[in-house]
Image (cartoon, rainbow, N blue to C red; front, side, top):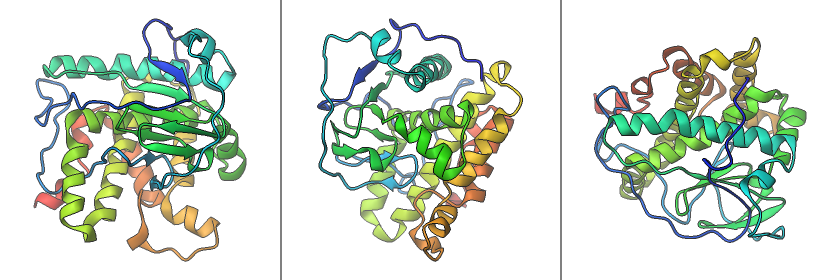
Length: 292
């Protein structure tokens, strides 16, 4: 995917360090008028609260102790993003995601806030607590940060067979999808539902993750002119590789649907494909059948 080079003045990025508190500036209404239509489903939506992390692979994670990399508060966005090729790619993706989603919020007269992309090595502190690279990329709603140790991309290629630039962009776009859910208020609604009925927590979490996959597809579809041959296949390979059933089989576990947190490989591919084919965020209603 041939993304444009990021403008360091237009993105929020920093080196991993202490996370700060954040405020929810999203509304609980819908993004209409040609923008996102946020489906308000009351007690049947999923979300996260400060103190929880939403990860690309394993869902909400337990916090762990961390070994922080040194932080240079004087580093510019350009210096951080040019640290390595993966960091540069990630910053290009962040800029493209900002440029894609912000107008949709403006069309709906809803306030938009860019997330912050946080690079770290080995471990870091976030607004949601300590984190380690073993967790994979994650989104922290408390500080609206997308956290990533870029060594994950090598692991994804070697251990999961999911290489290629589009597979890596899919990772960032998925986490960005959680930021959209946070801003629109979906996250808080579902968290409330999970607290009310713990038995539905995993089911709701799966639907949340599949919606983030769909949002990732919508972003790619809205930038279809930049997609290269083979990109979509890379995305589908990545979605297949990180399905709960595939991860369970590969780790020698029996497949247990009740313990799914992100959805099966088939589901993840289905919702990524739906976003890619439609380019319409309104089609990302993973909760529709719960209202019937």
